[in-house]
Length: 285
Ligand code: NDP
Image (cartoon, rainbow, N blue to C red):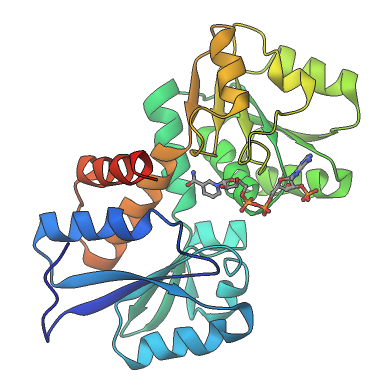
């Protein structure tokens, strides 16, 4: 833990709930290792008070905050400036209080991008099946575009899946299309040729399986689940059983945190320190 002095500046996590979050342990471990005069605290803020909480942070001279469920979309409205990632995704997970106002960033994009490249190498020109159309899936759609891959967005709400395919195209994906989750044959044929299959739904958080086609992947694809707890999720366990390389979202979580701390401090945090803190907290939970 960092030492808190009279001069220490505040960083926070605005969410509801926040008690389960790994962000405080990751950030405080990195801050202590870097010898910075900062401290990172969880701040449980009910939705109607989000704007007040941000004003309060500015008033007390906080350096910034992370934003998590359920405030990521509304956080766009409190920002004076948005990064390209935040604008495209339509959600902010990092607020940076600067002399020029509040800058809103979405570091989920770089967190996921780096983790996919670290594990799977270049996916340029490949095809990625993305299951889900929520907030995290929006970040994933932008990542697919940035990887130079084609996107197949699968969702249970066809209009939402169509919207995400459009987002991927707008973000520069060479091609993007939507498939209705209810279209079993369409889903199977997309998965049959996918270079990577990504779960960006909340299915698996409580031990749920994904729809059948996702639980019997062809052996020549790869699997990534944004969910990192439990590890492995049923989706990743089924992939591993079939010999499919399978990776959970902890690297994305650490990556988005490291990118936020880099934005706030201008310094490169020790990602291994953040990862070790997250692993330790998960092992003890
Ligand atoms: P949202 O609630 O915004 O989205 C959840 C998505 O899951 C929606 O598309 C929803 O569909 C879909 N879904 C839920 N149940 C079903 C079902 N039975 N069948 C089909 N689709 C379903 O959550 P987020 O996008 O914020 O987060 C999604 C997951 O990603 C979470 O589990 C979260 O833990 C993880 N995550 C991980 C991060 C990391 O750093 N590793 C970062 C952010 C998120 P519909 O819209 O139709 O309801």
